[in-house]
Image 1 (spheres, one colour):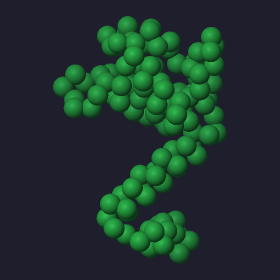
Image 2 (image 1 turned 90 degrees about the vertical axis):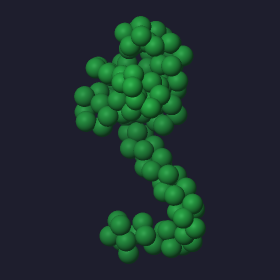
Image 3 (image 1 turned 180 degrees about the vertical axis):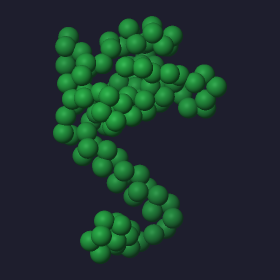
Length: 118
């Protein structure tokens, strides 16, 4: 797994790690069951604090991309990842339409139209 950090980026390092792992899962570079490097090993490789990598892993787990199996380490999770991503997208959409003042019923109709169900 290759992770490259941009020290000049405004994006925090943990977010860069998280986003690159998600990209690797999405493009098939990391498949279900792949064991991620231990937190300390990856932190050392990237010259980051262990807590920075731990935060990235924690957020990946909360989003359903990976699961921690104790001594077996952190592994790429299976089928729930797509549902977790869809849930995140739905929450982001809901937040956006609320911010725009769009009525919830109208927001649902926009989704139906986008899906071709409307």
